[in-house]
Length: 224
Image (cartoon, rainbow, N blue to C red; front, side, top):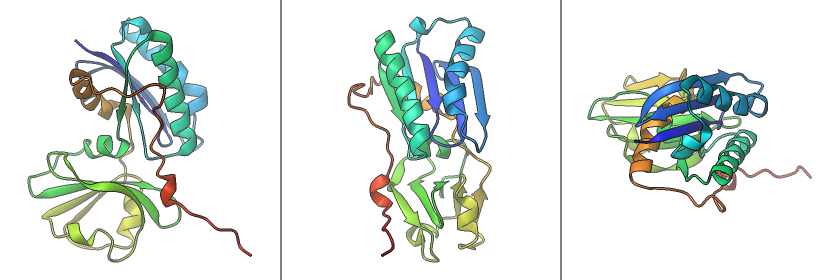
């Protein structure tokens, strides 16, 4: 029996989900462009626990969406998760943000899912998953150009999922491409993934865990 608190703060959606054995018990979330994480995250945690009738001490682990995503959002979420783990002596689980996004849609065997988070200008954070949610290309920050994802566009259908989908739609136009720009990362979609990691005892080192920023891929230079 696994009671898990799932926290998602990688984007504008401040999202908390309490789940037992992968089944969602309570949810609180608010998706606003103003980033409400600092004000609402701990309130949402408290409300989810109280509504389900559990004390924090009853948790088996805390799961955090590790990114990529907003630097500030990720810092707030990871800090909260690590603080709870230290205070309660509970293990920490991390879930790749793009994988939890990919899990939100069902696809056929010869289709792939490309979750994409809007970054800056024509840039997105992207990874590629097959129909069974196996990652078949690493996560990258990439500028969208006419030849982007060219090695993967011959599948029967290619699903672009997330806030970067509209940006891609403006550049790539093929009949087999499907765009799901309405999908945002949510703690709801972490529940099954985090429960699998709990069962496998796939935990992070609380002291050394850091969010996955992908900052190495974003370079800026000052004008002379």
